[in-house]
Amino acid sequence: MSKTILITGAGPTGVTGKRIKEYLSAYSYLLLTPSSAELDLTDDGAVSHYISKNHIDNVIHCATFRPNIGSTSHFVDEILESNLRMFYNLAKHNDQFDRMIYFGSGAEYDKSRDIINVTEDDFGLDIPKDKYGFGKYIMNQYCRRSDNIYNLRLFGTLNPYERYTKNVVSYLCAKAIKSKSLSLKQNCYFSFVDIDDVCQALLLLLEITPKYHDYNFVQDKKYMLSDIAMMIKEMSCSSSDVVFDSPGLNLEYTANNSRWVGEFGFKFKPLFQSVKNIYEYWLSHADEIEVSDIDRRWT
Image (cartoon, rainbow, N blue to C red; front, side, top):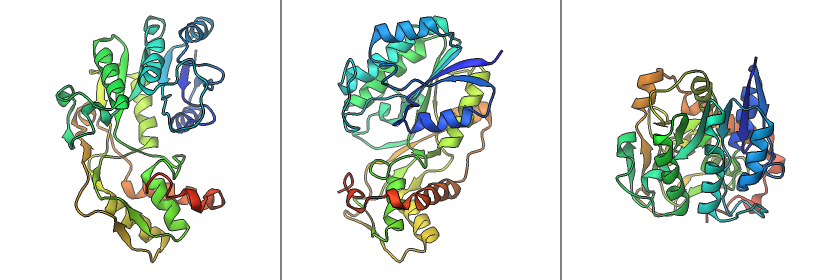
């Protein structure tokens, strides 16, 4: 029989969940993808009722609460409590499914400082000062003590569905397409990963019991924002300069993937191809780019 997978955050506004839903639809899984209107994950009773009436083999938890997304009507609308309630309302039922996979964040290592090529053993050396990172930190503490909950920790995804008002790569693509200067506040190093690589990793985690409960999931090499901007300049044939408002480098945000690669021998998609996919997506949706909105977050 096909496995039944609950994917949270795969509703109309879900970005990561949307692509995972599309990707896994090509495989012999039965996918349950309720929207937040259909299932409020911050409501313990609603989650318990949903799980009791559905036979669920695996959970992929993509949903997250961000107060800047727009109006909400959840049981809880506060970033720390909301994200923790969603996680624990699912995790408390872990004896009713085979495994639960969720997406952690490099913010678990505390983004108020440089995060440079960190390993999983560096977790806990600093406690995050922001609410989002602190919530992910608490989740990973619980995850490590669990029997069947796994943290695929992301430091930045390359996903064509990411909005240009939210994601820096989509933002640069939108600027190039609209012939605007490829300007940013400051250069910095990032560890990115393609969303389809994330989907490939999920296929492995769904079928193989991992050795560990948390993994840094990033490409083999770190990149500067200027590297990505130059790629976009090249593929768009833009005459705009790549400029930064401030000199020097902002705080680094990079990780070591040796635990994951050592166990799974993974081959990541080349960065240029990932960026090209995002550029071509937004080029085909150029009529959806509002010039007045492009710099809304980044100024």
